[in-house]
Image (tube, rainbow, N blue to C red; front, side, top):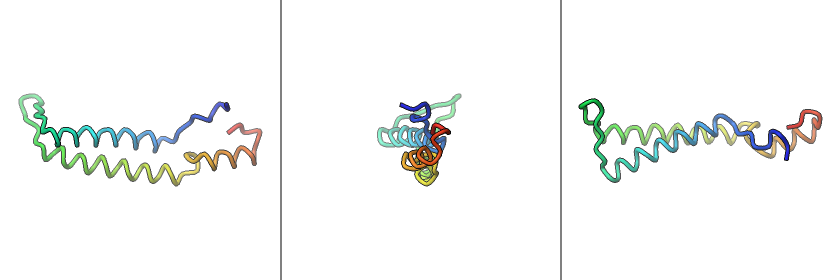
Length: 88
């Protein structure tokens, strides 16, 4: 295995983080879990907005990760074959 074989794009990582946040808020909506922060009860509408926002960010970042050359294994193989000294 090469050294950089397991390297992932930051867009892919952030897509996962935002996707996980959307999933947590979606679960909160489905099970109607009450959340109180400092005496203030967080409305479920806020979770609905965050599901849309985080889900949208996750989808956009996943799209970007698929389009960037550093994220696709095909481009890494092509670069490695063209420039074997680089060790991609």
